Each structure stands twice: as structure tokens, then as C-alpha cells.
Image (tube, rainbow, N blue to C red; front, side, top):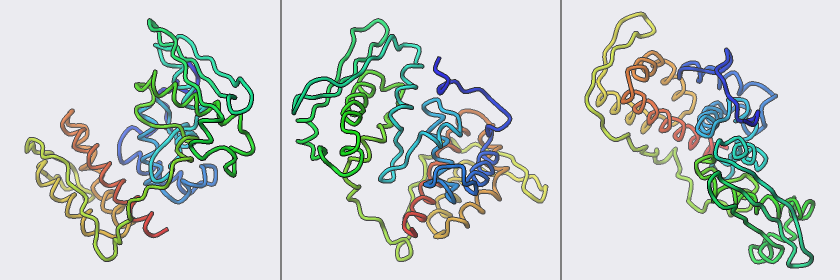
Length: 281
């Protein structure tokens, strides 16, 4: 299996939500993480989670997951490594052939037990898409961009289970910005929808003062929805979350239903923080 996709538990990999939060806060202060993640622990937490979804370790995720137009994407070389490391991958070949408008990048991927699948992207295709001659990599490395675009199509078509819907960053950079208007959070706070109600189980946790507390699933969801609806400061949300670290951990460790509840909560919190920070940028 490719080294990029080999991930084992190490002492540096967070195992619980409170550990992940502290890990993200620490990395956000480092100058050794990509600039887009510096000072943004919420984005780091989301990137680490996306990395886990596709099989990347935390630091691998920060190096290879890019946030473009507020959506996660993965650099083409990392996508190729994930596919090559997939147990069903029987081979991958790629190159650039042809001349003029017929010059094209191609990628052929074979899934074990199936026929090879080939995808191409030509100069003519790039011209129709308004990419040929575009300032940046399309001017500097046109053959490379043709090859990467063909690779993206092939990997997404043949190994969607390896990429889990995350598109190549090179393709994401060429997409037009999301036209949806960013809401004015100061004037009208976003009403983040609460997760679907689960069975009203009771969870026991220990507060920061050492007192043993209880909370039900429905009460927890109401608290979360209310907090996200009224808080307009990202740091205040992080503090609110940190104060309830014991609750998060207890619910998460209670079983599959509790883990699902916390996963929904983490996504809602990360989305809310990202909205606030994006609006403030």
C-alpha cells in the first residue's frame, strides 16, 4: 500500500474530540502548516476529519486537502496515491499525446476484475471550457494541466469509493466562485439546523468543576441549536465547546448513536465557525 495512505495510531494523532480540538488549536499557531490553515483551528479540524474519511493522517490531510470556494478538495498527486493504495487498484497509466487542438492528456485506470477505463482531456476541451491560456498553471504547465484534468475524471469515475466525493484541487481552482450570497451574520445570525432527533437517551458526564451531570439527547440538541443561533463570535463558540468537552466525550463513547450525535454536532459547529470567520475575512 502507498505510504501516503498508510495510517496507524500514533501518540500525535488525536483520539477524542477534546484532543482533536487542542491539536487543531496548536497547529493553527504553527508556521509549518499551509498558510490557509494558519490561525484557523476550525478549518484544521474539518480538514483532519475529511482526511480521515479518505484515509489520510492529520498532517497528511493538512498538506493535501485544500479549501477552495469554501469546499474541500484534494491535490491530484494525493488523489493518485489514494487510488494506487486502494486494494482494488490493478494499475494506473497516464500521459500526454497528440499535437495542436488534438493534443490531450490521458489517464487509464484499472479496477481489479474490471476492464481498464480511459479518460482524456484535450486542448480543444480546454478551449471550450475557457481554460486554455488562462493565467497561472494553464500558461506555465499546459501539458501537466491536461494530464491532471484527465486524471481527475478517471479517478473520480473508477474509484469514487476512494475519493468519497472530494474533487481534485486543480479542477476546483478552475470552477467559478460559489454564487450564493454570504449572509450578514451581524444583522441576522444564521439559523444552523439541528441534527435529526435521536432516541432520548440519557448521558452522564463530569463537568469541569468535577460535578457529575446528566443530559438527554433532545436537551443536548436544543442547547446546541440555541448556542449556534445566537453566538456570533467564533472564539465564544470554541470556548462553549471546550467547556463541554466532557459531555462531548461521554456522548461519543456511549455507542454508535452517541457517536453519530457528536459527529452531527461537530459538523454544525465547524460550519458555523467557518461562516463567521469567512464573513469577517
